[in-house]
Image (cartoon, rainbow, N blue to C red; front, side, top):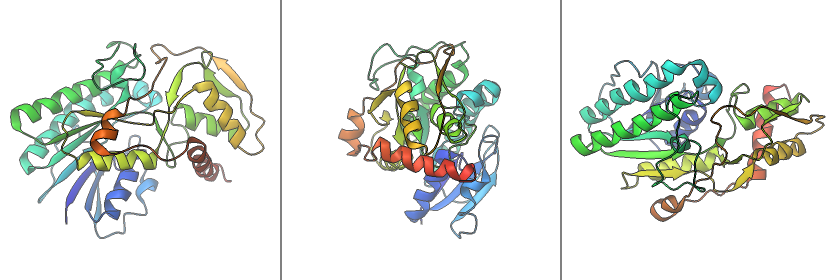
Length: 313
């Protein structure tokens, strides 16, 4: 039985990945310090024979007994509300945490996949963003702690590959949504659904013309699974190229949420907020034979059904 360590296992993406690898017959070792993760996300896995959980901060030394085949490094605050509140922890998990896990991968002879992000492209000057684009990032701006942590993470991961022959995979993850997102996550869709369910004003920053491309979590997990098992060591964009404006997303949420009386209001655009965001997924299509299959309206509806349960619906 293959053994895999998944950091950030109690988080949104980490918990779905834990589900997938359990389903595929792996022994899954979950690790999380729970500063943004939630044990409810993996409560259904805890009784299973082939799942174990370690409450640990990967910014400190990481020890796993026995053999290890794979590592998925998904530990990090990932929404602006989190990394603006926890800037030092965000920088540490992207640097020290990555260093510790690369050292573990080297010692165990394990393949490691790191969760990078579309934020490495910053406020991009090209659209869509291909992997060859180097980005437009303000290193000392409010988002810099996350952006630069991930850019450093990529650089260190590539260095371990080049100088220590560690097997690496780098996933640049674009906006992903679905069940198990936190109600107070701070990102657009959880905020919109929470506000609409409670019939509060929906807050759109700026004029809402900034764009995002939303990928349903099941599609994202499939892309990560295929990338981990591929033979490709350079970064790969994993996301949905279906680009819409934030205003359009807010309007679609209002259409889906039953009985809401929410209205859209505008607030000042945060500093360095990206104006466009859309992945070029040519590499994922050609190398992984991967393309997202969940229609946005279907994905939004599934996500709404989940958020309803969080508000007693």
